[in-house]
Image (cartoon, rainbow, N blue to C red):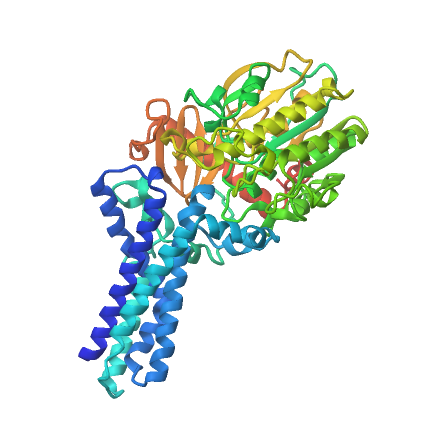
Length: 629
């Protein structure tokens, strides 16, 4: 290799690595409250991250390095310099985007980022606001890339010339070999994967170790859901078929049902539930005192597009791709809508968003709703538009009462609010009326709570109110400033509240585990539904059932069961924590193979096996599952 080639090779390598460490620093600093660790552990995570940076560089900057030995002419040299800067900019831009996007997904971006971004016009509606709010991330990205451009310009400015000869060919061959090794993440037998980021000294820093281009590359084109078939002696005996329990039924079997899914309403914001002696939801707090409250309840995912199917169809997303945009989205499914419709219920999905925002309208059609009500179904679609997502909550919820008055009875309706989603746009008359708290979302949570108060106040004057079961929950959690709500388990904690104005049996605090997918079977049992159905949840009031919380986080499946949180990568246990003794999940018990860990592993393997078989073979109803299995 010539001295001239080595200078450019090493120089461009250092520039890329330094820039990626700088955007890793941007990611870390913007999210520092999520990554509490000792200084030496943080330094170790940054150092270990170089391995993952080299993988991304091998894939995206590889063509530049292969061409480098042959860049003797100014024009072709300039072309590849710009290729290098654009590809490197792409990697760094993804890191800066995730420096904020991570707050909402609790993970680095995967290959569904681009598909997810263009499901509707939502991205274009909120892009100007995102730029105005997070200008500092854009500024950091631009500054880092200007530094890279200046350094590359100096590196390639030399007027020294060289001729292409056999040395150039040898240099290219050696470079190709180095690229292959870098792309694999080293010389080990199996290429480095996302889960390997947890091998740093502080596994809770795994997202700092990673870079976003790496996680996208590693999930790009990957099978949405591997088919799992474990040996019979490795799994527990569980089934997704539910046989309703006729006990604990409501007095009136023709009860109306309204499920209100409040955008981003994490337990952390609710004073009556969070254990923090502070909150932003005075109305929800008051409702808790006269409701059945599940204080140990969890979301099954971190995005709205994952939360909606979990709540209304008992269908979690245990894969990279959200169910509603996956290859399985056309599968026949059970849902509250299509199970209650034959019982005489009118069914509706009420959401003030733009047309097919987040693919909700398409999913509602597949789930069997009679009516999907969106922004343009609302009487004043422009006058009460928040400028970003749709109709502001208090307008829309008040209109829902008007619409319910027209519906045939009994009716089932899902309402999904939107004002507590970034950019947290409040109507002018409600601005500066609620506590601003410590996070940007807190004021909008206060507004959402007020919108709920108005909804219930107006509904209480109708003739259908006293014969209605209300369920209040969230699609997922959001911004957090308390460490107990930032762990693998705590970051999924949401409220699940059942309220009936006239049925005293729907009161009291319940301590058993409950998850979003349990909402459907719990409602059906209260209504006295008699037919078996397909569900990945259970009736939360069934004392004979297993009560667990499952999720797919950080490239792993996890289950919270009998006081233990256990994670597997699809093959073996990767983490296990005793939540009772170790609520902040600092002491990994995976290597100890305790009885609880082994039981949880068997349960989780059975759960994901049923899930993978049901989705891959389209066996997601009682009829198809019983015939297909």
